[in-house]
Amino acid sequence: MAAQELAGSGTEEAGRADGSCGGILTMRWMTGLWILALGGCGMAVSDKPMLEPADIAGAPQFADGVWLMPDFDDASHCVVNTALPVSRWPDCATWAVHRDGQWFAREGNSGIATKAVPRAALVVSNGDIAIVQIESETSPAKDGVIDSMPYSFVAFHNKPAATAKLRSIGFWIVMCGKYEEGGTDNEGGKILVRFPGFDKKCRPASIRVLRDAAAASHTPQTLDLPRFHWVRETLD
Image (cartoon, rainbow, N blue to C red; front, side):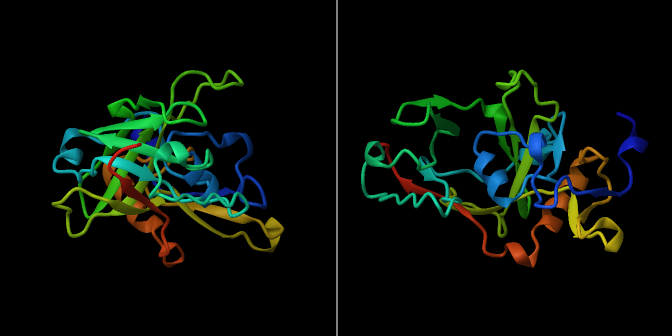
């Protein structure tokens, strides 16, 4: 990929007036609900991993046990009593297990059977703002389409740098720009103004560009961050 292809910032019209991305949106492990809830259009993506060994040296570590995602769907009324064994939780609960540096996702939509998540599919960086690089499955989706941009990113505050293992993080999606009003000529639509260093496909030119975008994506409007948090030592 040529450097000049990635250099500079630009603008792009939002896909729909309601802010949705239509067919562009891809479901990714652990981020599918985040993207749906927080908005998938304009998020930073990549066709290759961005984090190098130097970026992950001394990265924060997660406590072993069961971690619970927040319920983004107000209509689902997914109430989870974390004092109960996970086998008695409602199927709507979104959870994962961390054990000895390895994440395990639920196998299927119910029950407590788990499957290991490939370590390369979920990589955490160091830094005052930690970036989580998530790789989607490379196998074709149900419609036969392979994700050409399998890497997406979320971020969380890591300052001061965590010494104890993390038990809770407030996260946000790393965007490739910000939406601004498009003016009268755009019929009330919004324009995506890309951050410097992103191309039209929202790919960052470097890890520095990605880190700057992670910081810029956390605006005052997202101060009340959703939290991914530890809730139990064991499943049952």
